[in-house]
Image (cartoon, each protein chain N blue to C red):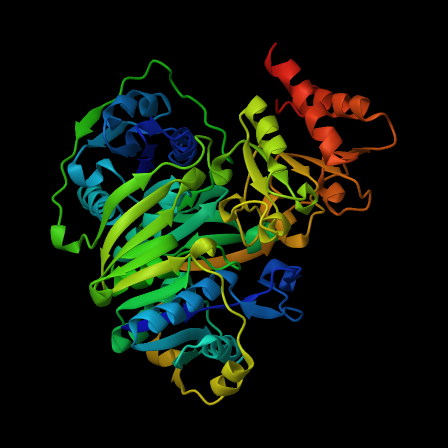
Length: 259
Length: 326
């Protein structure tokens, strides 16, 4: 099978968001980046699929120079090679459709049997790119994937997706397909030391974003704001616990009116 | 402004988000309900047309076909696309539910049109659709603007209060039979397995009771489920509790789990890491119980108690039971 995995480099979960330019943009000067957590499940699944089904695996990422770190991590976990869409120096807005269009061009060139990615990225929380790449490449997509059973040497798969309240939708899907990995799909491995050494020498092809970018953004961001800080609440301590619980439940009813 | 609202039906039940979306649509059309259409898909969905009319749907399309009786992405997209072609909508709205978030991005891509996802407010700036949406799990709010004549929007559940416009309204119902391109349906639903509980998903729940690392083990979550049952709440967990194996992944609240927006969020034994706070900070009322008076969760809590959760949970259960039994 030919297996492709899309990886995004995102600010880590402990990042504090600050505004810049009076809310026109975000101050990213102190951002530390990590592989999007859901993409780690996608990388792991790509590696496991290759281990079982054979074939080749490719990691594709769009971003400035730093995203090579994310790609090398994927290679250290076992991915064979990379295609980097270099956005260094790009100043225009990149909405999810622009990103999906650029990635879809690489997908169309590579002709994989399956494209893995995380079910969403934890920075913009949009979960757009998977379904959009699938649409642009005329592939089916399944999002929030928790289980995959390959059939007929990878021509088909039975795929489970988690919806609300733990409900599971089970699909029969024909390849090529796009699968958005959820947490419970697998447990990502730590890159082994020999893997990290090998990854440094694995091929990483570069494309300029301008070669694969088409058209204007369909969505623009006008401004950012920070959520309003709440007024300090009432914290009870040192009184008998039954009294404190009674007070809080009373306030939930009389003051907050939520029960 | 002509709007189509996708009114979601799951297991024959109309989701409460339909009323929320129609209320917002009325605001955007300045009350011109003739410009608000709704579409219902799924087995027995026609029964819900009247409810949609009471919230202001001027016309309700009812689609009852084998392909759409159970949710499948591609048939849903083909159906809505054919309605868009026939009716020339400017705006198509749905809920940012697992279903809406599955097919709206792809639907928007098919129309090369803007999609604004998981928004908490929609407005018009001239002809342009503008929305506010949380990013970084709520650490900031972006104001996003559609640049296309047709815009798709998914609205976060439980943010906009649903208001009935006219309880006596009768629905103008039209059956709609899409022409499906069967060769494009490459993912077919084989089975839907019920979840462990009948309670709403965390993302749609109006009451959430959450436990953290201090729960100590998986069995102890039973006391939270018992408390939750008293008020019909959904149970959540912090990343620390999930990573320790005390709770399954689908219960995780936070930046790497679910972003939630209930009326009441009760956090037991959760210290309040930045990524957890991001995922629940828009809860309308937050209650925190923790033994550590310096726990960051108390900064965000409306009401806090410095105490051991194992002593507090049964007391909360008794107090809440008294209220619900009245």
